[in-house]
Amino acid sequence: MSHKLNIDSLCVREYDDPRTTTPHQLPIYATSSFAFNNMEEGIDIFTGVKSGHVYSRYGNPTIDVVGQKIADLEAYNTGLDAFGYLTSSGMSAISTLVLSILKQGDTVLTQGDLYGGTTELLLKVVANSGIKTIFIDLTDADAIEQLCLTNRSIRMIYLETPANPTMKCIDIRMISRIAKKYGVITCVDNTFCTPLIQQPLSMGVDFVIHSTTKFINGHGNSIAGVIVGHDEKFKKQVWTTLKLLGTNCSPWDAWLINNGLKTLALRMAKHSENAMQVALYLSKHPRIKKVNYNGLEDHAYYEIAKKQMKAFGGMLSFEIIGDIKEVLSILNRLKFCTLAPTLGDVDTLVLHPATSSHLNVDKTLREINGITDGLVRLSVGIENVQDIIADLQQALL
Ligand SMILES: *Cc1c(COP(=O)(O)O)cnc(C)c1O
Image (cartoon, rainbow, N blue to C red; front, side):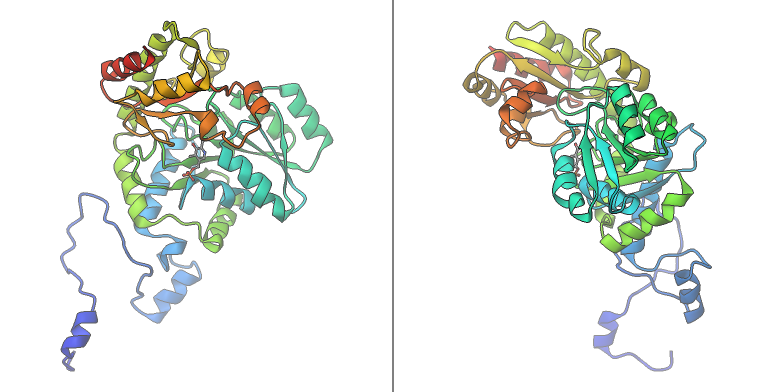
């Protein structure tokens, strides 16, 4: 450049390092847009003739590679060519997917014990677009088949297995079989398991969503989600909806997820191993009435869990004998476990559903579903299990 820039313009200039050594770790592309070398390149990228990035709401290298990695994990050994889009939260993964696939007059068939936010989303937001929701017991194959047969507006079956906080399992293969027969799309919220434990795509499911906030990130330092699918006919539709709703993930959160993913296999194995030990300990404790853990052979859903899960995961719940005051004082005595309304972190987390996640659910309804005042949910961490058990032991005295 023959013209010499003034010092204030130099402040504004972006500098490029001409050395192109490959970074060992994924860089955070903190950029809202991507510069074109010339007008022709810009036009080619915009029209899809050439692949490339344009604007970070439409995709960004940090976000895209992490979304694809989760898709590859979900599709591992299935032979499917899956796509994955990171979103700003688990909730936005669900809203983006539902709004991209369904339209006015369609119905979602789902279970009554979904993650509370998902139920509210369907009833308070999605319903405003003329999309109905029907709640049913998704373990009842005959009832599902009957409904699909008589109500042709059902276009999606949406499920969570194991369900929060009772660990009730739904037979994923059974749901896929019925759904396929009636041309219904299926989506599984796989947040509790991660693809290391359960791969719904391998059982015929169309979509998997995650709150990556939980086990996938694992360190409790970001809120994000992901939509994974494999049917090419939906790919563009999901991406377009995500782009227009603006429910994209930030590159910073994508980068944190990427860090978490590296230890996901180790963590899920340790979560499962520790949860089994804690479940066995609690099931022998005189102050505990019931332990809900899929790894216990006497748990009502042990057989289904064994059929579709590679391990039993880190989540469990248990019922303390006593009134609510006694239960709360036991929880207040915990010193090592953390009272926090999330799950899937490396440390052990405790939640009391009756006074938090299910506070607004009618008491009789909640008790019918096994969510009593004495029920405690535990997200068992990867610490030394002796320390978790010792803390529970001193609190339960
Ligand atoms: C937390 C959670 C969500 C919502 O995810 P956010 O990241 O908080 O938006 C959805 N489903 C399940 C099972 C969850 O645990």
